[in-house]
Image 1 (tube, rainbow, N blue to C red):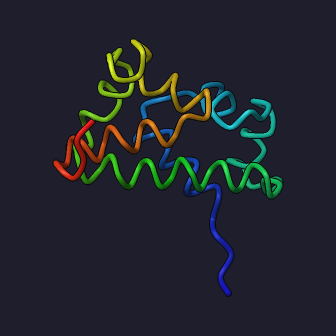
Image 2 (cartoon, one colour; image 1 turned 90 degrees about the horizontal axis):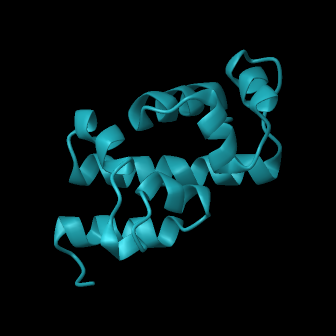
Length: 113
């Protein structure tokens, strides 16, 4: 079984979401120093962080189905009524991945909110 390249996944999330390492750390409730070590390949995330990174990777994949990649950072940073006026990036930070995914399903026309 192949090991997931978390350095690559995190780098892709940073790029796709248009966020800093500090914001990534905040999204997964890790330290900025840990994220930096993972990106440098000096260590690998513990299981709890691996799961959180994979959740964000899934959100990223769903975002790419609904939006052009260049619009993802702007969309993540825009307050949305369905999220109680929060920005999707804030909802992700609060662990509300399900709400963001519901919103994306709505955008794709698969769900009515």
